[in-house]
Length: 559
Image 1 (cartoon, rainbow, N blue to C red):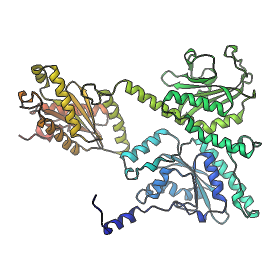
Image 2: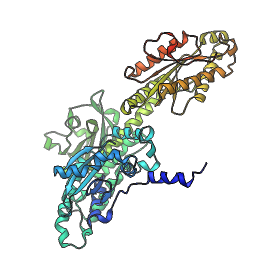
Image 3: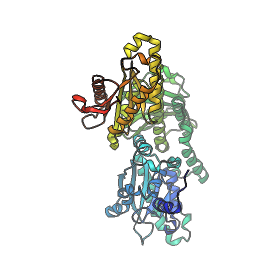
């Protein structure tokens, strides 16, 4: 690699020098330790700020995505209207304020009186509430306006939470700030001040060692339930939840939106097999009602005015039924029963489930995607003859890329390719020769296209190419490259073709205000292909509305 001179390197270093994120020496003495404890227990990011941010006075459990964005002089401006101005908004409102930033992260900002001389604000959250927001941001890093920041370290500490979790964290911050303020004047060592923890809220009599062990088990929960196979994920959720709440029995029912019912998916300690349990309609039974209302139940069957079936052999009548959801999306219901010590489940036990419910929901979301991917593979996304993707895969990818283009205003182009006079080639030389010609055409496409392009066998002798982030002009260059590659390839019986070689005609279309659906884009490329066929073949044309004459040509063959 050619080395740059010192003269050219200096401006580059100055341009990319990271922005300082934290000025810990300016933070109130003793507070950073308290803040870190709250952030770790809550699983969110916390930043103490005195004004425009960055820098912050103290940062705890920072989201690695936020750190990358705000460390970059080129990208920090994206965050300025959000976290950058959070201090001024919270001080002006003199109350907690909530916002969702450009990256799709949910945050809150609230004034905290941990030092009388300075108006300080706590920024909390920096968390994804919706997995779709996370996927959209990941796409921006992979293909969009944030590509320059993409690195292996970017996703090492991504924060997920729900709105309830953020609210609980804000309450803990407020309580810790009040206690800190009252203790500071009489204590020389502020670092000894302990914030309230989740364990203290659940059981004030729990020892410090037990609290520490409990919080560690909460932190490890997400790791233990995350598996590559959906079935294993479902079973792990039941097992880990049962262990967390000392339950001998547990079950997970997943919600089927199409059937509007819950299906038993995983269980522990049940007499009946999964297949023997009938689906539960939404709104019926305890689980159906819990999911419909979005409210957890804990207690005994007697408290609900119901009787437990003797066939199920429960040791106690105590249970927990908890709805799992993210925002408006409902995943299912987690049931736990038969507490090992024979006790009764109560609101304190529900609060434990609340701590891990966001992790369960995200694990179910990932499992759902994996399950769909497995089903998609079973439908076969590859054409067996050419090895290219098939039409089903092409249509799915086209819809995805079109949605991405609409969100980020990316260009998108599409190419339909047809082998000229293929029927004649097949009839003269036989179907085996025709199959070989299709295979060779597919090889030409692979050789001529870029890695990001998606080549598919559309059907018969027709192929299609999806061209993400590609303008019509760029697509024209690629189309001519494809056409020339096939023209120059020596097919076994090519010389007997009407044009003296195997050739292709190509139709092009591109995403626009008038072509804003997958169907419209494919239809337009097909019309352009028809135009190319009827104007001499061995050429490429682009769709330009109602075409007439040769004016629609993007690339014509050399004569």
